Image (cartoon, rainbow, N blue to C red; front, top):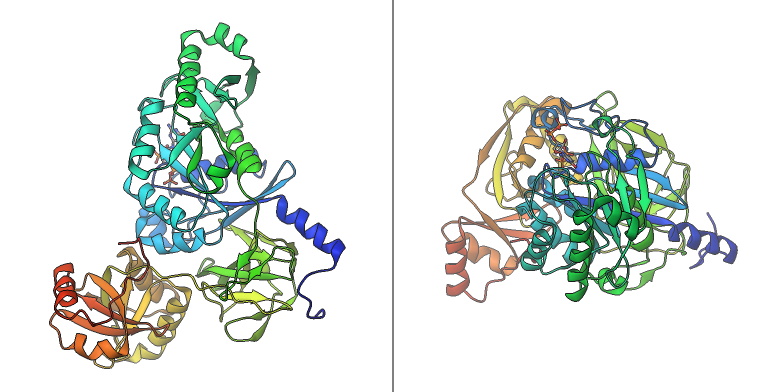
Length: 541
Ligand code: G4P
């Protein structure tokens, strides 16, 4: 290992700064069915990773599916596993980090959002803002992540373009600043009007459909005058809408966008590949490159300092043939070279990075070098858990990822007492991966831990994996609790005496008091104001 310096030599520091500057790391957040998988395929298509959309990512029974790794995902047509797609686009390296589609896995999504520098909020043009879009947007806002909005499915009949923008203003308090407006009403998507600084149209991009949207849609570029001649009234409408937006102050402002006050908007059809290239260009031009991060003590680790990374996701059982466990890290600073020995901040132990991969669907590629912003999967990293830090040279530990307030609770037992040993081992593994939160107390004992989840599908993942990977049949009994608060040892005894309340210790040592319902909690808070009862993650309830 090199000497303990706080910054790399000047020449490599310049190269590092350049590599970091050309990276864009983002996630797509959307309500299920808004078109996230389709958009991911379309982005990959534009990056020429695959020749035909649908070859990498897709749902069960739709095209050729390779990203689904569990029977449950296949049966439900959802994607639980997170993956990262990296591709070069122009001079940039784009990292698209996948988020699970279902709201039951919003804790995983939250973890992914700690690993990205920007988010693309994907909205179905006909449906507008949906519950999961709103929730995820809130998480992005809490994390201070700038958001680019894509209004998808413009090839289908839907709302008027400005109506959708009003909904964004009214319901999430974000000012949408379209960069491109659709030419043609929803259902008659002809192309995009590019807005200039003062809202005046600068060009018209006309798209041509290809068979099934399987190849890149050819583009023709016209001046506003040519557009008027070609499209007539339809163009005039788009141009007028652009001026209206300018009059309302809805023009792009980079500072306001980075501060999370405004969101650039692109109208698109992921299915037809309309507007996808414009999204990539917007990411390159406007999305922020990786920046340094503050450690637990508030000291910055700049991107040009020696290697450091945060684990944001642990995934086991992606490949049933290998029973492996992958820990995904997002590189914060320095250069990563496969084989380098790094330190695991939580244990102080060395960790050899012999097997480093990028994973997308079932495609796995060995990574030899990576830079700030990149996502790398480390194989068989058993000690690593979400929120952990890896580093070389000068020690750094990044703040832990806050856990969500669970709302579903159930006791899990092995069906057969003879399987107890495997049950415990499995429970420990699933716990450390962060699949569910695991709670214990003396009264219930170790054989029947209580699982705490944000959504009940997390329980399904646990029981399916217990059986599939560890061959343990389990029984799950729901508990009549609905909410949890953080408490302390001094309050625990009194709380345990109350009806409808039970105190547990979570694996990370946090004491959690579970309540049967919010009225019980309200009553106890009012009657015993001295008891410690704190929210787990602000803004999630
Ligand atoms: P998700 O990952 O966000 O859940 O959404 P996904 O991409 O799977 O898309 C959900 C459905 O919406 C799919 O239809 C998909 O084809 C369709 N879709 C996505 N983008 C567009 C678009 O731009 N325009 C139109 N018209 N449809 C779009 P499906 O019926 O579930 O599957 P399929 O049989 O059409 O493939």
